[in-house]
Image 1 (cartoon, rainbow, N blue to C red):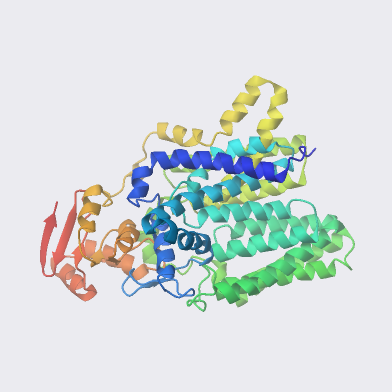
Image 2 (cartoon, one colour):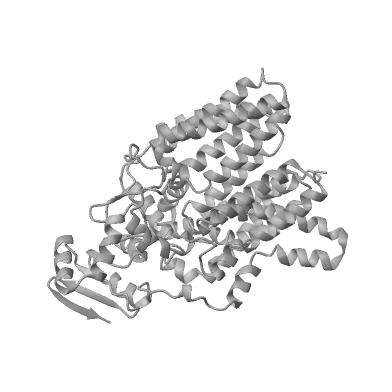
Amino acid sequence: MPAPAAPAARTALLALSLASGMGAAWTMVRWRDLLARNLPDPDDLMRLQQVDDWLAGQAFADLTQHRIGLRGVAMHWSRLPDLIPAAMLRALRPLIGEAPAELAMLIMWPTLLFAALLWVAALLGRRIGVRPIETMLVALLAYPLTPLFAPGRIDHHGLQMVLLLAGLLALGGRATLRAGIGGGLALVASIVVGMETVPLFVVAVAVLALRWCGDRSEDARLTGLALATGGAAVAAMLVFATDSWALPACDGFLRQSWIATMIGAVALGSLAMVGRFATTRVARYRCVAVAGIGTVLAIAVLAPACRNPYGAVDPLLARLWLREVGEAGSILTADPRWSLRYTGLLVAAIVAGIVRERASPAALRRMLLMVAFASLALAAVQLRGAYGGIAVATILLADAIAATRRHGVAAASAMRLAGAGIAYPLLAAALPISARSAGPPSCVTPATLQALAALPPARVLAPVDLGPWLVRHGHHAIAAPYHRNAAGILATYRFAAAGERQRRTLLHRLDIDYVVGCDGRGLIATATPALWRVP
């Protein structure tokens, strides 16, 4: 039975209150870092730089970071996640000044996104009988999801999680034309933002298509989904197509991913049209099979890059760098502590969801379970694939917690502990350190940052993770953690492996002013051909 309807405004106010409280606590803890613009992730710094470049006059369609790589790098990002941060800065700068406006945006934008996530999660939970407060309390502690909304986290991942839950809310509720339109808009917006959640949307749409086979009331929703997906994709192309639109890749909103989206929209529209004539369950299953196979074949022929969105990554780059990126690793091969942190809550939610589904079947819960399974499968390829599953896990676990109350205090307490996402990184910390955890010393140290901040703008050869920080502080970073910057990243590895003469040749060819050492103690600077160390 659905939970009693609570006024939407009251649920939204509760979500905003909880998110604001969490945001205030985070802000107090990280205040000094926020003042110094030491943001939680390098991508947040780069997003801030991207917004600033746009506000300073860089073209809306030009997403090239001109101070990365050998001669600039066309980012695989989108302007869509830049819109609200840019609007905040434009509105606040005349009122309170540039630095305070930037600080306010860094705090307000993640907090508003967190409030939106809590609100949409609560609406989803209410549809399977969970009180909004129950779902929100689980979501507040849902590691590794919640850190995506900490102050300073202005990259696109938080927005993607909100869009994913909004899409599931539309696809898993009442079968209306409006619901289909809402699902299509969320799907296309997510594709424009980035490709990470696309597999989860595909699973949700596949579940909807199978439900359509046995429920003719789904015709209206499928029609709305097809129309909105196709129409929104065309509108998005007109507004958000970048200068690198024709690049033969599928790692962002490019021509290839747009073609794949349109193929999907046509397939959905075809199903909606034949639904008038295919009235039996068997006939509709056949239609879905034909549409699915046709979609896969059409994408393989017309958008071949989308068969493997990151297949264009230089194999040498993948071997030397990408496999060392923690969240790009697999739960099967990563340090067990990382795997437990990222997927512990997701596995608990899947188990709890299966138990609940056997006891009290619900169509929405089945869709959420399938998305959670898909997320776990993605995490077997890359750990960050678990983010979307954790967002879904909050609803499944809140549902399980609510159901265990009738079984006594002990059962309810155990379920609450299993649904406390913060417990899994604590458990992971208690595990022995794996040999796979050992890595090179970090160059991102206070001594290094202080030395670099004192330098005039320069071309710097530095470890990959320093790239966004260097760009943000006026330098040109040869290496930065973006797969399209293969030449710049590989230059750092070639420099490290070269002899003294080869190093000097490379520095001269790349016109390098400074080289950052990786001994964790400070800066190695070169004014070719001299070489010296600054502690």
